[in-house]
Length: 307
Ligand code: 13P
Ligand code: SF4
Image: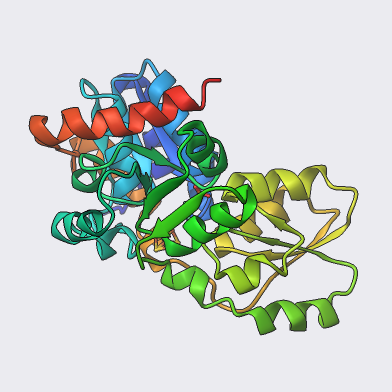
């Protein structure tokens, strides 16, 4: 019997048209997904694209909190996560009970959550932020003191940058970014003396302090593309490096060290996306009670970032 190999890419393109679907892809995902994606970027950029779309189906090639955020902004659309293994270690570090205990230590303070959190956590917070808008969002509150969950390092980075706001942080972190040590920056300076070092604010503050630029995944990519410099060391997940190498073949890029890879971000395959679209499977569901409260939290971020 003749074996016919399925052309997933062509089938996905056909299904997208047939079902009025779009694919949103985070820049840590496997780079082969870009060919079938409508938008590739950081978590804020993708949230904006999710909010703007007229599509009936959003396939989110990212991790679950990103797909949940798209669903919060689009309660009437179908949001699909192609592979259910796609969680986030940091988001899973904080549950509602832990949040309530943390809040009880600092009553009456605005509570800001990083978008890397579950819908249940967002439902208990005043506003959320991403790494690209954290400074703007936190400044917009006009508060002298706030609580920030779950990422302690993003919170500390914002506190240092703003200078006049006390930020009490929960002790969550990203295991992938914490693998980058300050001595890795020192070694990179010796090995690549002409390179600019670009880091994500989820890195430990001893790393961010030594970097030439700190920003979200998309901001790191934009910085490298626009810069006059010809060589860069990337201190974030490898997906950013892979895309920069592809998009700027005339420049040199190095990963700060081997294996800065978020395994959670690598589950979604072209095949998973095909089956997600075909069977409309792994739909994100959020109870109405949680959705209403979590929507307020994420919508407050979108409003704060309009100005
Ligand atoms: P960005 O907001 O920069 O896309 O970061 C999301 C993330 O999970 C980084 O680890
Ligand atoms: Fe979560 Fe870290 Fe992976 Fe980002 S890199 S999705 S914070 S585990």
